Amino acid sequence: MARPIWTGIVSFGLVSLSVALYTATDSHTIRFHQIQRGTADRIRNRRVNERTGDEMDLDEIVKGYDTGSEYVVVEPEELDDIAPGRSRALEVSEFVDLDTVEPVFFDKTYYLGPRGEQYGKVYALLQRALEELNKAGNATFVMRGREYLVALKAEDGLLPLHSLHWADEIRAPHQEVPDLPGRTEPTPAEVKMAHQLIDALSADWDPEDFHDTFREKVEALIETKAAGEAVEKAEPAVQPTGVVDLLEALRASVERARGPKDTDEKASCSGKTGRGKKPAAKKRTRASDVGSLRSLTKAELYERATKADVKGRSGMTRDQLADALAKDS
Image (cartoon, rainbow, N blue to C red; front, side, top):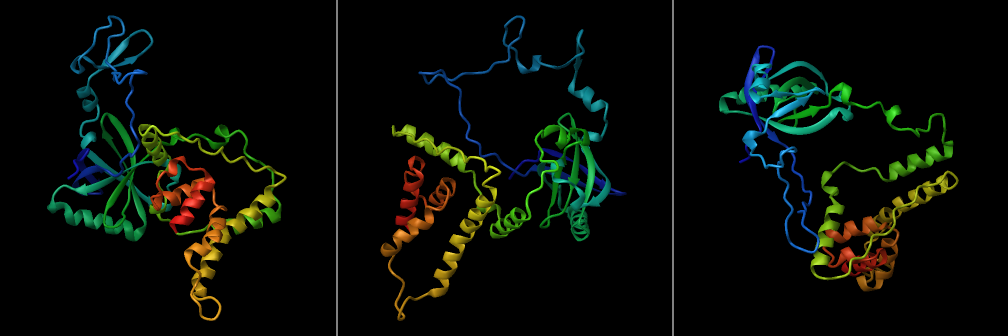
């Protein structure tokens, strides 16, 4: 059972309930240790007094704000004293249409749960009302010495809580991105072809369709080096499309996006070939399989190879991945 990272009271109007806050996500980042080159000796970071060089214990370390001429020391209890009750209260000040909260404001996601069966009815009431009205409750609360702006919404019988960026934390896009196209206009043919490409690649959102391929490649790199095998470098990055060949690139992209799908549909609809004969064996269709696979990028081939658990995929070239997948089919 997960432990809550915060407990307190959620209130809206004169209604309140006791809640606990839980982390909603995990990180699957591969963590490396720092070691001295040529040895297996770990490198340790220590808290050292900059002036004396002495190592400090945690109970000797306090927070200090640099004013320029001196440090102002701030104790944890002093932070609690300036906002009595705020660290245990999450008061919803307003309800807004969920669709009006722009994605750029969202930061982290948490799960909010009731603390005890006696609060289940109030929790369920708030969850149902928010879901039926498609509303989100905006609130602020203090956790770990920091105030958070949050949006409370309803989803699948649960109350997820999203921490939001403050308005002054959002950077102006036109100041951050120097090369926006401005008045540059694509041609009608390019727009039409772009529409066709987007339509051809449209799908229902399913997060299970995506996974961290870079992490898998790092794991494969570690396995390959541990086995003493040679590591093959990845193919160069795709070059940006130039203005001259934009339309042709779009057209080729549409044909490629439609190709495998159309081929699969024809194969599934035909069932039999010729005079009621069964389709040719896999061995005979392998050449065509390789042909369709060679139209995919190395990243797409690697993803399929990962799902098929093709051995040695990390060291394969694009053509080798296509051949291995064809043999595995």
